[in-house]
Length: 202
Image (cartoon, rainbow, N blue to C red; front, side, top):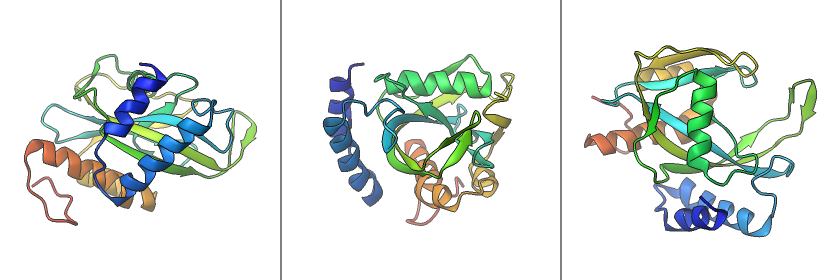
């Protein structure tokens, strides 16, 4: 997928809420105005891809324990020049969770976010605080498949029910603004009717 094709998909993407409306404008402006928007060499903000990985009946979600953030979190990574962000999301799941069989529920964008990243040390080098301009895809995998950690990035890989996934995360902003949203959107695909602030799959 070319940059132009991705940009068109972002333009056509219908925001789910106010957060996505605002972040959609930000992401499109950044891609348009920065030739290196897909490279982490742009130290202010760069494109990333994330995966919300569910099982077949959508009753579980795959999470990793991220070493830098000291929290259970979703999977994903940097574009590093690649504009096919679905391919990036799939690759990151395979690398971070050690599974081979992961497939897109849809090739369409599932959500988008502007994510703050606090300054941290990676591979012995300090990385300044910056933004991840993120595209999320809904992927499916089999919980019976063997999992393995990627030791330089995470120290745990596990399937949780959506409710437990929220409890496991120690990042309040992600829980309230990202994970609850993704759970709600997944439930809507299942045809589960929900109240505005409800995240239960029951």
